[in-house]
Image (cartoon, rainbow, N blue to C red; front, side, top):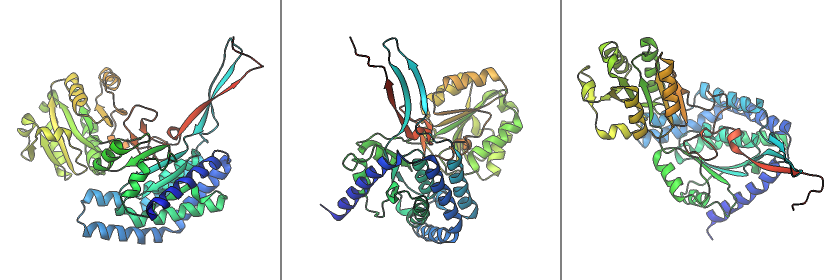
Length: 420
């Protein structure tokens, strides 16, 4: 057996043992740990920035894209944001031990459904070092042990943040095995996690690009919370407000083009081509966005590049957007049903009936009205951060926060009843 495999098995056993302890500790103890983690993040800001600079320098030498580097980069504001998210998580009601429902049966049984931790969660992520803190705190709050495996591109940043989390656990008297990170960049470590580490891991959460998520979903021997791509759509209805449309579409694409909630395709009702369609194209282009449009849209603006069929199925994660003119709301819904990845879709309209129809018929994890798709985020939903966005339909869907990291058990009481 290789040294790597021995080490990963050891980590798995330690996590399993920690999960049994975490299910018994108090909310106060968990909150004290998370508050201490936030303090450590702020107090060690310069060390985190120094570690992040190493990762950024390596990324630049490797010629990685601007959007990738944006996801990787930390600064004062983003580090402060990590600490704020941790404090938000600490402030939430403990999701464990809650009575989700209860009822009595004619057979004399009193039944309750009580929330429980999932157990051990494996998180495999790439360029976002903040996932280290988000995942660690969310898992702790929900009574789960976690095994983290960050990408090589965020290696130094993730390790420095993990040190802050461990110090927080120590302050609260919680085992360090509650939040472990794999410090080996060998890809075989990922394979061992996907195999469940001898049944020590209960669920895997991948956070990264299409190649990573595809590999995880293909190879995992344990349940997976994942989204493959964030091909998000905005439909601009014939009754859309011009000012709202210009602001929302530009924000949804250009605020941070490299996140999974960035809009990739904008569908436009043909009636607005007579009014403010050209203004929309100009607004996007002037903000630095490359526009790839259908045959009709190319005629309206000289900077529009003809779109190919591949553009409707591409998650650009860059300042590029595809635009298509549609004849009706039904036409827009049909396009989304065909090309969406099930992540986030938004309709821009003042017609409440159209908005209701769109939100009822579109079967994505998040469906919005007059809202930028960049709000597709656990923190913005008030969930205190997220481990990721799940586009599956089993157990967790949408932002995966503390409540989505729980299961439940049935607690049954009676007065000596026997079944006839």
